[in-house]
Structures are given as structure tokens and as C-alpha cells.
Length: 165
Image 1: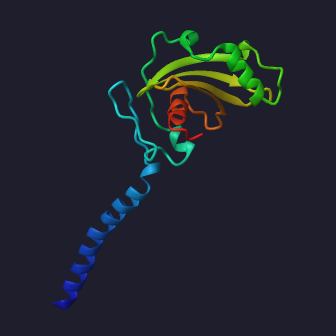
Image 2 (image 1 turned 90 degrees about the horizontal axis):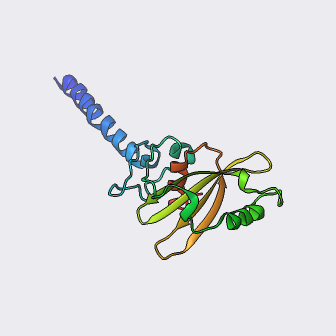
Image 3 (image 1 turned 180 degrees about the vertical axis):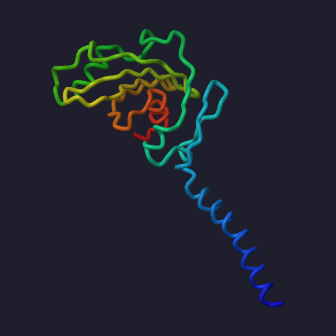
């Protein structure tokens, strides 16, 4: 009789312990758990702590942001000349940047900030995104970074919003 009791105890332990161990493991790996992100004017975007630990996982997230009106570079707080001057400082080929090298992609409203994003190919062929971010205090931030993970413009804007690049 005690033999059957021991087997029952072992089986019960496995039935309880394995799912519990999985839940603990999943919680510890939450940053790499792929959950689509749907954003909008009243939707919640992930916090900095909820962002994926690696851009490989960010590239697999679905990200949607509303557009600014108008969806154009027309109301961007940085002029094309200022953007080109910035790119000349960042690019290894100082004289090669021209407006034809920039392709405007879209605008985005992310919580209380506004974004404009362009595609840019550096003189060495590297694909990059150029962003202008307008913050609530009126300051604008201009940035450029490579796109080695082939992020969508929306994924890149989310990463820029959280300053993870």
C-alpha cells in the first residue's frame, strides 16, 4: 500500500511542479515574450521595462501609431538643411548628403510626443532611419541610427521613444 502512495505523491508533485516551474520561467523571460503592441491615442504602449531585451524581438512586434495631420515633413520642427547638416556630421562622407538621399516615410503621435521619420542610406550603403522627435516642452531631438534588424518605421519610433538605441 505504501508503494502506491509514493507513486501517487511523485505524480502529483510532477503535475504541480512542472506547470509552476514554467510560469516562473515565463515571468523571468517576459522581456522576450512576443506580445503584439497595438497603440493609438488612448492605447497603452509598453513601458521601458516591458521593452524587449533585444532588437531581434522588437522586430517581431506589431506596432501601430496614429499619424500626425498632415502626415508630411511640412510641420517638422527641424528644417531639411538642419537635418542634412546633422547627417554630414554623422556620415563618414561629409559632403555626400543631399535632400535626395532622404526619403520621408511618415509621422507618428506617441503618447505626448510627435515624430517624423526618414529613410537614409549612408555612403557605405548602410540603411538608416533619421528621426525628429518633438517633446512637450518644445524641444526637438534629431537622431540617426542604423537599421541592422530591419525594423519597421513604427518599431524604430517605439525604440526611439524609449531611447533604447
